[in-house]
Length: 170
Image 1 (cartoon, one colour):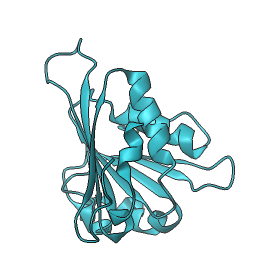
Image 2 (image 1 turned 90 degrees about the vertical axis):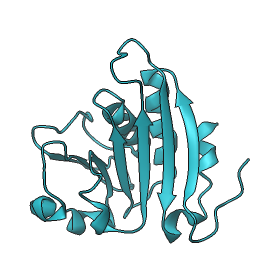
Image 3 (image 1 turned 45 degrees about the vertical axis):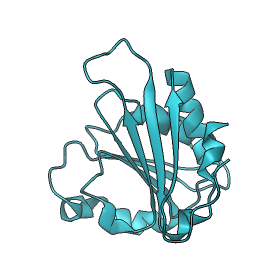
Image 4 (image 1 turned 135 degrees about the vertical axis):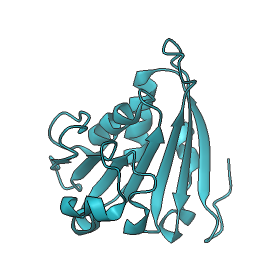
């Protein structure tokens, strides 16, 4: 078991996922660590499992509606079924600019009361907060038959410094 990171060191854990169901389960486990105000940035190739992970997050957070890729609508809000926060699921794949282009989405307004998950957000949403969870999903590009994914979860900022991310691998 890893020791918690020092306040200014990023907390990090690495996992291997071998099926879409395991990716969803990772999302469900990750949801237990999330709270309103958290930003989760997902990075990975097309077909890596970003939306599958987000489905698991939605299940774990107990939100309404099927979590599907918001590629064409850019963002979807999934209200909670209970007392938890809403899930704002953003797909920034089609957005070429940085945070300025995303201002119309009002993510800065949604963030304090929601869990905001941004696919393809690298280089676009970092300015929203220094405290975020970055999830990198890697698979061998071109090998579509291989289900194995290598996932690196990194918590940045004071919010994540004391969180034991190794619980995600149990």
